Structures are given as structure tokens and as C-alpha cells.
Length: 476
Image (cartoon, rainbow, N blue to C red; front, side, top):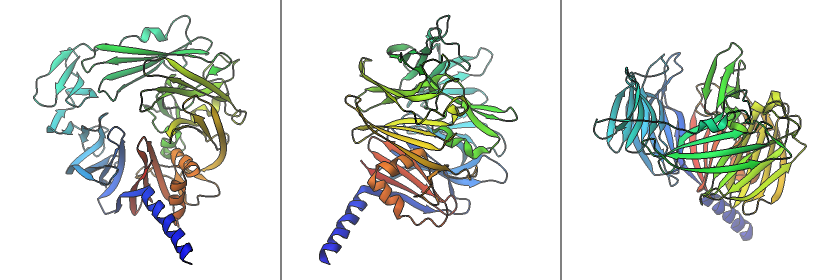
């Protein structure tokens, strides 16, 4: 009997050490969680709280707090009335607009940071890039020019912003896009502007990826090129997160957005809307490891097709480059389990890659024509294939647009009333501690889960979207 209690104690101790509750709160009237944001550079999560007002679809945010992986909290503001809040690339600057009940944007832009609070007139300025000590913005006056606006002081400096090189993407020998060339612009970890652009050959078998870096004043400071040659296959579009998606409706309305979470972020908007490719950037995506190596990954199309859309998926590929752009290895993996996924279903895919405990995890999912999830293990050092598992899941599209958490998939047999995103389902199959926690929850009604996989562990956001929410952190 003592041995049994000892075993139970040890199992419980390991379970307790593997995960920590960061915050757990009940929903209160006019004080509910409205959204969250993961800050990858800081490895923190921000919780945004406030209330819903009448028929307005805008969420009135009154308070924002950030939490680190040990549960330490910081209040960014409280007792404010703002909407559409988000953090800059580093997590050091918080941006929010004045709350407006019915309009899409507020009158002023509020900036929060070490400098305190600054307020900008949204009618005069259109911010483009938020750095830690200044912003690069577009001034809406007669001349219409770019200016650098410092957070401390009010003196602006006129600059010429010219992100060049796009002529390398189009021409007689390049693929004639049915959408737009694949171009993605963001601020990298070093605080510089980075532009990722992708040229595609006419036969869809060769691509060059250009990573061009500019300083905060818009001056070019460097470029790295990655060469990809599929040869016996063709490039094909899938929802990799490497390009923009456009939200369309049967009635013709469209709204372009960067689709970080794939199809799962659009299904809750109603059966009359669907997500489609806005450009060709989704042929692949880039994953950066902690050593500066770059993995380029995407799906393989049938070799006879010289078209990014009118094709079918026959497998996937991974290229690994070092931090200077030298190719370390390339691998292509075939499968016949995805052959039904063709033009009508490419926009219903979800493709991501992660590094978990020194092993690459390649995640592919599709909601149509079959609900199928593929998980592959790849050796990160040499690209050798380890194994692939296939799972069937069930789609659940019952989310409300005012929900705190959006999730829409579940295991058909093992997860009754537990609705997840794709990463959570992956972790449920791959991580014993994560599965142990999910299985320990008694879900009499629907509970939703969102996850963020970081180099330092796993973040889990849990809520029934009615009465409570909880944030946990699982250590690596």
C-alpha cells in the first residue's frame, strides 16, 4: 500500500512540476477577458479585459496586463476606454485607439511605454512601423511623405522610404500570378524592417526568397537569398502563414489580413464567408531557430502542373539554411494520404513547423474534403525522416464573434466538449504532460483551448467563454 501511495505521489509531483497556473479568474459583469496576445520575444502573454457594449462589434478594452512564465504580472493601463490594442514587435510599446462604438477606427492613437503615454491624431498620421524609441509614419497632408516620429519629444524628421527589389519578382520568365507577388514586411528581432519577397519561375519548380533588411530610417543594410529547386515537383499554395489571406463573402465583400492562425480564425465569422489567398507568399514559410538557422517549408504539388492553384498536394518539403544563407540540407517527403486535396480545398489547409525538444514537428491539417491531421517527426540536424502519424478530427464551428477564445477542432473520440486549435491537438498527441492535463479536466460543457509553442515552453489559454478563463505554462 505504501508503494502505491509513493507512486501516486511521484506521478502527482511530476505533473505539478511540468505546468504552472499563471492566472485564473472568473468572468465579471463589464469586466471580462476580451482577447489575449502572445509576446514571443519577451515570452509573456497579455490579457485584455473590458466589456461588450450593445450591438457594437468593437470591444471596449479597459485594462491590459502582461504575465511572464513565472506568473509575475505588470499592469499596462486600467480605467481606459480603448479598442484594437496590440504590442509592437518587441513587446515594449503598446498601441491602442480611442474607443468608438460603431466606427472601425478611433479618433486618436494612444502609445504606452517607458516614456508614459502619447496621443496621436489619427486624421493627420498613419503609423507604419512601431520601433522601441520612434515610429515610422505616413503624414496625411498635401505632400504626403514619410516621417520619423520620436516617442520622447515632438520633432519629426522627413525620410525617403523605398523598399526596392520587387522588380525581381515579375517578368517574362516568372510565374504570372493569379493573385499578387508574395511580399511580406515586418520588424525583426533586431528592430529593423525586414522584407521577405519570393520570385517563382514560370514552370513553378524554382523559387528565390530574398530577405532584405532596412534600418528604421528605411536604408538598406543587408540581404540574404535562399534558392529552392523542387525539380520533380511544383510549388503549390497552402495556408502556411507565409503570405496574406483575404476574407471573402458570397456577397462580394472582401477584407485583406495577415492570417497567422490559418483557417481556424475565419470559420467563426459565418457560413457566408471564406478565406482565400491574397498573394503567392503562402507557397511556403520560414521558421527561425535560436541559432539563426532558417527552415523553409511548404507543400509539394504534382510535377506536371505549372500552376500554384490548379494542382494537388503530393507531399511536403523542408530546406535548412545557416544564418548566412548557405544550404545545410534539403528533404522532400511524399505521401498519398493527401491526394484528394486540390484547388477547391487548398485554402482550407493549415501548415506549420515547430521545434520540440530538439526534433522538428511538421504539422499539416485540412478541413475539406476530409478532416485529416498529419504530424511528422524530422531530425533537425540532418533532415532525416523519423515517422508520420495521421489522425481524424472533428470540426466544431459554434463560436460566437464575442468569444474570448476561438477554436474549432476536436478529436472525434477522445475529447468530448474540448475544442482546440491545431497546435493544441498536436500537443495532445505528442506531449504526455499536456495530454495528462487536458484529460484531467471534467468538461460537462464546452471548453476551448488555444496554445502558443515557444522556445521556453508551451502556453495554454483555457476558457468556457462564459464563466472563467485560465492561463498555464508548460516548461520545456
